[in-house]
Length: 73
Image (cartoon, rainbow, N blue to C red):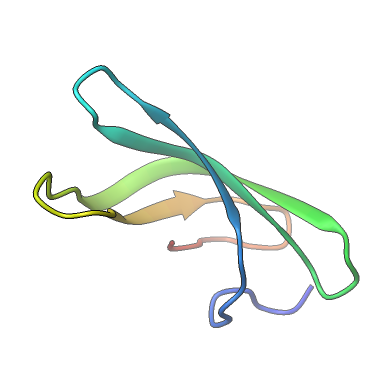
């Protein structure tokens, strides 16, 4: 698999939202260049930016995949 760290592709993000509205990313998946669906499970959240006064959130996460050692989203 080629590096997915520097590409702009659509992904399906799976997350959990608690009763206070805090988002916790859990995994995401995307189609690789061969059309195969690849699922990446997030191991650890390194940093997050969840401002309640705007739409959206930014996370830096760590994930291990047999083809990757570290991934930031």
